[in-house]
Image 1 (tube, helix red, strand yellow):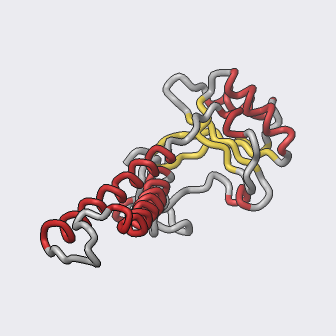
Image 2 (cartoon, helix red, strand yellow):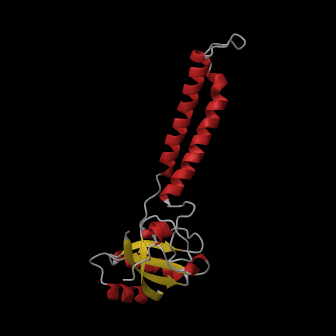
Image 3 (cartoon, rainbow, N blue to C red):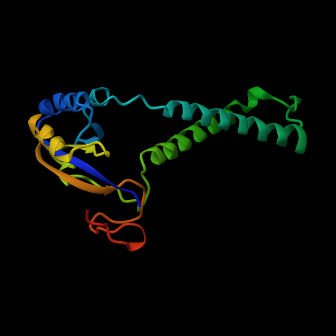
Length: 195
């Protein structure tokens, strides 16, 4: 079990959040995440997040689907069960294009969805903690991850100075685990240690 410490601050306006994120990054604090009730254009750039590589995974899944289609059709129609369809050759690639296209799209779509769920740790019954439940309603929440070098009192004072309200220290488990939002339990029913 890996319980981490976070300094969490709430913002009530987007115009206060953007400069605060920039100032927190310049001060050298490690931003765990910023939770918002709606997507905010440009926040990922301000946080310094790199672009996703999901499109590369989609390309790999698509090529896998195309290769699977060509391999299976070639094996079935050219080697295993040769049938003469109107005098066409056994390896008739133009006739297989619809099947190759469908398997390419199927593999790419399903593979990208599963990869996205894995990267974002989304799965049924996997508990994802919210630092503030109002962050899905009307509050912007910034969580700063505390390291060994982080002075919590200075981090709290700094967040309050950049416009955060209700700043507090919270403890959360960083790994995947099965649970519910209304129960403070971790893997196999153990209680969360209060630090």
